[in-house]
Image (tube, rainbow, N blue to C red; front, side, top):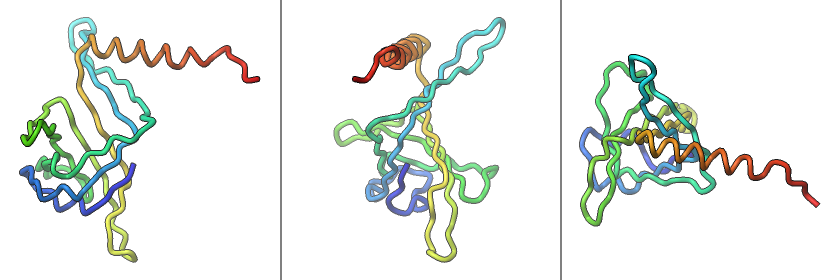
Length: 142
């Protein structure tokens, strides 16, 4: 995870002027909701990315939340389709920044990027992930 630019500059509305801000994300949390008896329960799967996903500030809008601690930010994520930006209700970004007094800058402490997907997509993702992990087992290096 890596931050370029000043993340606190992002406000409640998406703004193309924030394109200079970039977040490199190295893991994605996939979430789905399955019925477990009487109620729906959330299930998740975290996947480490080989190539970091980069989200620019022009695709983010701050979610105002007075209950967050200082330095915590939650964002709506927009998808860029041509020249248009479309809010993706299934994507969510949460960031924790710590301010360094000596350097006078914000430092990225933690980052959570989640994507809500359907049960079918979740099953396919888990199956593919399991196959990828087990395909390397049992082989010997020469």
